Structures are given as C-alpha cells and as structure tokens.
Amino acid sequence: MSEPGGPKLRNLAVAGRELALAWGDGHESYIPFERLRRSCPCALCQKGPVATTGSGSLLAITALLPVGAYAVQVVWSDGHDTGIYPFETLRRLCPCPECAEPKAGQ
Image (cartoon, rainbow, N blue to C red):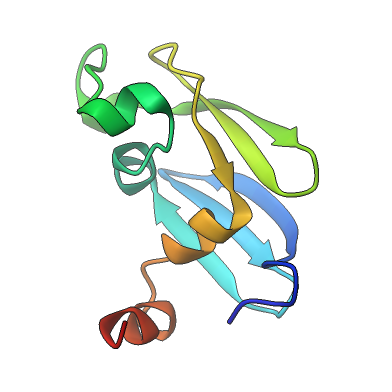
C-alpha cells in the first residue's frame, strides 16, 4: 500500500463533507471531516479532544496548505489550524475496506 519513501499524493480536494485524496498508486481515499478532525496530530489534540465552535456536523475545512512534499496542514472553520497531517497518516485514515483489511492484521 505504501510506496518507497511513503505514499505519493497526486491530488487532494474537499468533496462535500469529505477530504478526497488521489494517490500515486491509483487508490482514492475519502476521509469524512469528523474522522479527520478526531485524528488531528497536533499536540493540543493529542492531549484531549478539541472543543469546536458550534455543531461538529457544521465543521468545515477552509484551507489546505502544503507542508513540503510530505504533509498537508488543515485549517478548520472553527479556527483550529495546528494539525499537520503527513501523507502516511492520511493514507492510514482511509476508511475503505481495502485499506482497513491490512490494519486488522497488525
């Protein structure tokens, strides 16, 4: 599933309430906003859940900022912007059966 040096991301975009990612190996991932936010890798979120303004179902991505050639920074509608998601993390968050199957054996 991973390419040498980590997964290669060809494209990413917001699609409705999901982050859509196209990978170099032809795979596509659609990560729901709620899953992405719960998995925020920033130090603040790793200490505990981040309080969001308003309903979590209204939470939206307002910007996607590249971080080198290995990650993306997500800016949320509630102002949270400290999460930098490495491509490997994004690939692991893919909820499709193809990606979930190897996780079960780990």
